[in-house]
Image 1 (cartoon, helix red, strand yellow):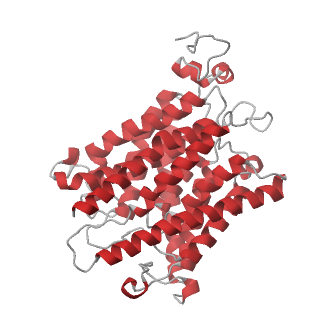
Image 2 (cartoon, helix red, strand yellow; image 1 turned 90 degrees about the horizontal axis):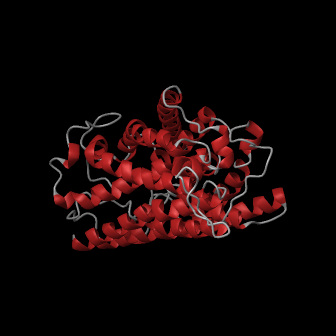
Image 3 (cartoon, one colour; image 1 turned 180 degrees about the vertical axis):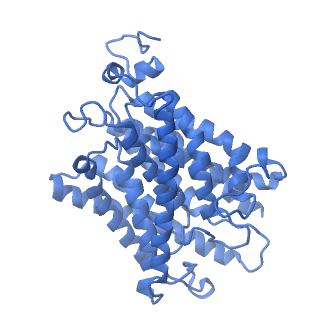
Length: 428
């Protein structure tokens, strides 16, 4: 019991690190120098707001009962009737809510009022994330992998990545394009920050995936220490190998399409592989992980260019990486999921066998339906919130402010001193 709690505390800390500093650095480096502080602030404020509302009503909506779409926000409001022995699990799930919401910010970099984002964050977490998290993670039995969305999802391919990716696409369409999008270069200002952020995300993701082996009853004799080692070992290996394969897949496609393998491509490949293996980490063997990683890296490298062809301005490729990667990982479970007897093979395995392991088409159909449910829920919820904000306080900063830089306009600061001048803007 004490050992498992220590394991989960470490996993929780790793996932907390994924938002700040990891995502903040990853996104911050990808923006232009006049936008880096605002981009990082969107991650920090997401952590602050979502963490508080999670404790107030989010945890209750996800875990307090058996509602079809969500549980009652009042049952465990403010952690009422939640014992201290449940705080580690509560905090682990808090970090998922935080990172999911923060991921969306990359789709609307450079052009959104900070106040509009502050309003959006609690509304979206409440209406989109908490219900989907309940459908995917809201188990009330002792199952190790439990979902009511109709698909296997080990650590959040639907509730986290498809959810955030769809939200990013909807916001990009509602908010509109940046000034000069498609006409002038909008290159990352500091790829060193992005590479550091990607590396930290990779490390943090072990908490995300390996920590998602949730034991609701740690005294259950049916789940032995050997099985625990098998499951955590499998998810650790799959997370690592899929990510490695995704880097190669991304760089190969990048080389073919653009003639060069870039550091930004390597960093993006890391995230694409991590996204895709998230739902499948406990369901596939290492060969499945390698194939999922390679496919996700290659397809996501191609998909990030769709914004120029289709005309939506997804600033930092949330759609191309998180939506596409989440769909790939979730759907491919239907092909590569494999059940095993961990007592004899050391592999815990998925809940059912996939198409390539004699399980027929049922698993694949379930995975596709789970993807469609996540897309529909997130799309409708996000669109309603986005339109309400658009027609009330509005999303966009002024064109002059966007041209001058959102950091100065919204925060009165600049990330870098120029020629010994002050970092404070004229409006500070």
